Image 1 (cartoon, one colour):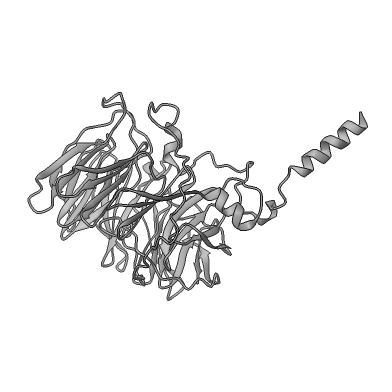
Image 2 (image 1 turned 120 degrees about the vertical axis):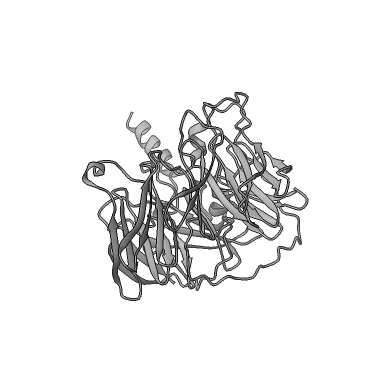
Length: 440
């Protein structure tokens, strides 16, 4: 019997990976119950969902052309730009921690942060809005708008900033404008219905949607409603929030029912609308989900839970419908898109519809490290220095060339808590202790 146990222990040791100390792999004991991947929650109820698992090898000598680098100084929109498209940011890539602040808040932070005029703007679930001056290395301004009766309710704030004024909507039905230079609320209105979308600014208009999928056009100077545009309501709520982009004086609005609208900003009339909900059960209670849409070069990119759509901006007609999705906001680089589905990195030519390559990222990392394949846990994908930056939840960054090969794997000095942003050749984020970290 002793011999049996000795052999068993020896066998188990042989099958253990000796690369665990690197820390890059996802810990089986620390898998978060609240995963940011919205799609996982719908696998059991979707009738058409199939996990993408095709390996497609890039043709030899295929050339990806580098794009212009963008040195960024502000992040005023949670999705960065009006059309939700990320740029190819400059980054020094020295992996040096050049600054760490004091703790901004003791409470759980909302994942999106903003940056304007060297001020970082963050919020937490208690409704605190904190503005921290990077130059002065201290809190510049702070606000908690809510009265005592709302104290025990978690607040989820949607924010956008323009010229010292933060415009905020929340899950209680409030919209308010906070001038952080003067440290005062300019106006506030309670619309009674929780808001459930990002916010966009166009001239003197705020554009946002409530949980009933009504699009609101609000005067940013006083908070008065200029126009409401009702759309299909989803009776059953999930984690997906309506998504809004602005492109060429048009609002592109994707609601939680799965309908996509194009609306003229000037006359507020609907240009066209289509439904992207491909469930066999099309009714108001059906669950739909997607990641952030992007509008670029007269094309609309929508990664739903089952398919990746590329649509014509002018008519809404489908150019391509692919059998993969993107569990993170896809990256658009000229005539190419990069998406991640089921931990596969997929590159596609948007002019021809051809998938150029599809690689299993777990396998790519294990080959690069020359270790046994395990699972990674991805937090975010972005572009910097003509590379795809894959941020892992354990604070590693996997840098991948446009052709799908790994360029570098590095570990950040701090744990990432908020979504990272690129500012002036550096990466900014709040760490796991809610302190600002700047990596250069």
